[in-house]
Image 1 (cartoon, rainbow, N blue to C red):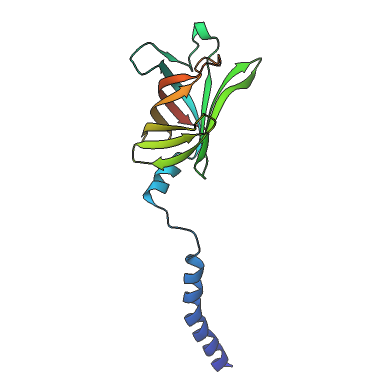
Image 2 (image 1 turned 30 degrees about the horizontal axis):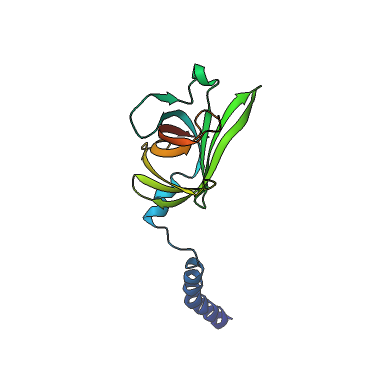
Length: 172
């Protein structure tokens, strides 16, 4: 009886490391530095400030999250990044106690750098490539973004190139 147990233990000691190694080397690729940089963005973010200036030249700017008297109620701006590198930037206003989406754009993240993202925005003709400079808080709970974007800032059906500086806080 002892010889069977000894043989079983010997086989287990020889085979177990092989099984463990095979299980741990699955088809999952190793995480790269770019993956780790992107992972900090995954989730939903709400703008605490979304300052828009029209055109490429310096000029007046408006924070769309504040209540601009000439343009009605403030906007709620939400930014979502999914694990698969897709996302959505959405603008909504409160009407009769509920948030009503006014406009939004889907995008995918083409490139991630230490302080920049390259986004490919769907739905523009042709699709728009947007270079975003970003700065993250040390705890990754807020983002400051700076970019130019083809936007209808006042929901009037008039898209124009705007310069944007926005601050987002992570939801939940």
